[in-house]
Length: 141
Image 1 (cartoon, rainbow, N blue to C red):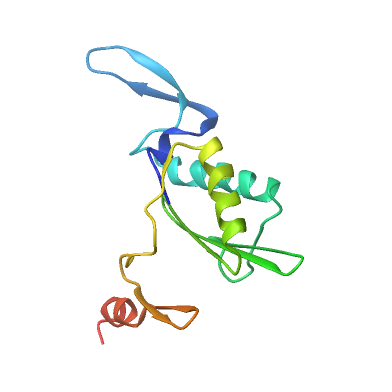
Image 2 (image 1 turned 90 degrees about the vertical axis):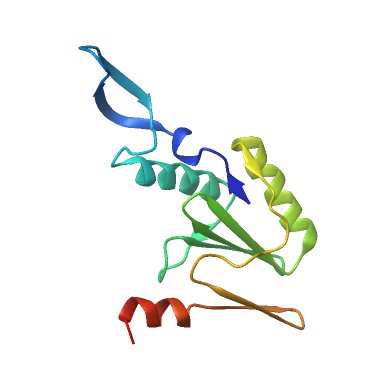
């Protein structure tokens, strides 16, 4: 899923002013791209929505959320304005997509395609995400 204009959704928790061309100064009511707190404010808004849906962020990565109820596992991975949804139940994936699309303007991009820096491999009923090439490049090995 891709959240269209993700950084333009959230309201700002503090007063921020911008100088427009000329001498006009305006207070921003919502976030915008290029604003330092934009990604953090977006994350907090998405975090609030997911927590209302009974998701919990993992201890190792605050951009990975999990919900496990009555044998149904839902995993959500967040990468800026992209959301990856994994589940052992197709109905639960559809339920989450509908909930998110009611809250945010989103595009359903269909099946998982490679993400930047992540190699995606499908085996049987499993999906393996590997970042070896990204790590090698980052560490310049």
